[in-house]
Length: 201
Image (cartoon, rainbow, N blue to C red):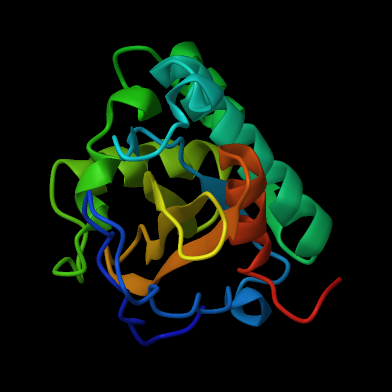
């Protein structure tokens, strides 16, 4: 996995921004090849009030599940050299070991949306390390926040803050805000996730 932290633009505010966000940093798949990388579930999705997308995004639980599913599908299609462990597998492991493992949907992963974090804080770090030991290797992907904001060309833009972390050391080694515009939210989201693996159709 890439060792350096990639700076990311902060999510746009409630007013359309005159300039777009920073380009999406490519996912460092070469360093992850052959490993089992657990993808934690998204826990934070927000839609700017200026966008007429609330109905299309849907209620919170449905939106989170849809984002998780799309993220896993795109990564498995475009980065098959990595064995991606889906959020559902984390949930199953947590249910099988209730009391020993924390519920991944209740972990404070949204904290990692802040670029000030270079190290995972406790108790999040210890919770993730314990759960990942049952399903994966040492690296995890955390979609920390999904924000839908007004676009500059199309109706709106999806901004997905993503980090890769080493649960053994707690270090956050890579971070980006995957972003793309679209005519509707889930088209924008899919485009944003595809931007993590450039160079493919």
